[in-house]
Image (cartoon, rainbow, N blue to C red; front, side, top):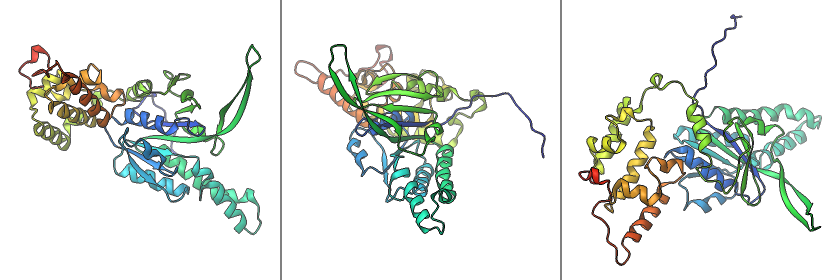
Length: 359
């Protein structure tokens, strides 16, 4: 046996594993999409739907791909996660992971079938064949090379409370998630969604958000998680910049050229001498170009884009969890406001010190 060794512990850049639990209609799916949009940084979001495609009710708000499973067999979840991973999705949402436990061909149904088919009819022995399937799903969730968010239904209870004036109220509260006992410990962060759409961060490996709560969380609420994940990395000098990748470099400048932006103009907007001096990812930078391109259609440019979306820098759009549909809606509203009677759209909304820049 090789001699055990040790090394200094280092915090590496990592992928999020987060669970959202709560009763029906508490906002688990919507909140998962808010978080996924903030995490994706313009990348693709994949959602595995076992809720009769209910997630598509938000397709006009969020940009994501959906996969509906015919059954809730653990291997179906594993295969679905693998498909999104192979396609390069930045985030995968499991909505709902509870079905892998109680759904059609879920673990409990598989266990019952195994018990009926066994000679002994011993349900305890049947777990020997079913537990490995459950463990394989957990292993896939832990190893997938993208962020993973899972929603889980909560077991329900009714809480009776009486105030100082003797008034009694009854409210529905969520208890343990509907999944195998201990599943909640497989995630970096466990959050509870309450009936009034309030999120409560429970167990968390991210100290900055541990114990935090808010009503109807936005992308900004989740920013501490993103900072925590991004901060978990090796010194940047040890990691190649995306501009060192010839394919990504050519695609970036080709896209910039297609929307009428050359290198000098891009460098001025990013306030860098070279794109290699930026700390934004390739996908992030490409996404910002698309947002600028839409703003250029109305001759309001980058300054107008920021004004329309109420941010100081275009890159902040991702931190706020906005997608292209939201950006376009914000710009349309801004242009309509400028075009109202008595007003005229300015020839350029750019900084006066940058009059030579067409945006």
